[in-house]
Length: 70
Image (cartoon, rainbow, N blue to C red; front, side, top):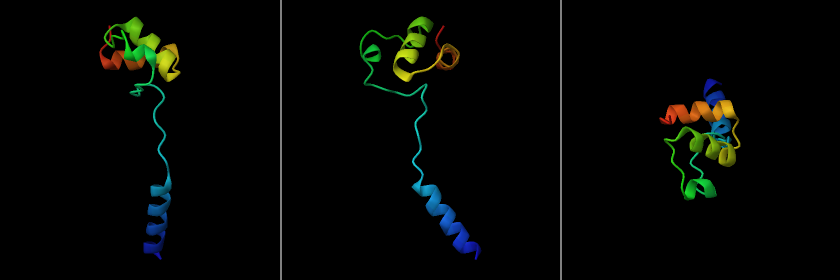
């Protein structure tokens, strides 16, 4: 019985499609990131995050800080 439960759980887990994180993704289709985007500049990083990843100021500032922007 446990084996059947483990197999069913494994199949259900494998069927789940993982969604990508909204902020911090490497979305190369965003025009802002394809041209003159400097991820180490806090203002540029936050603006790119807001425009490309649909983030908020708080989440984008945190994301950019973790990436090393100042």
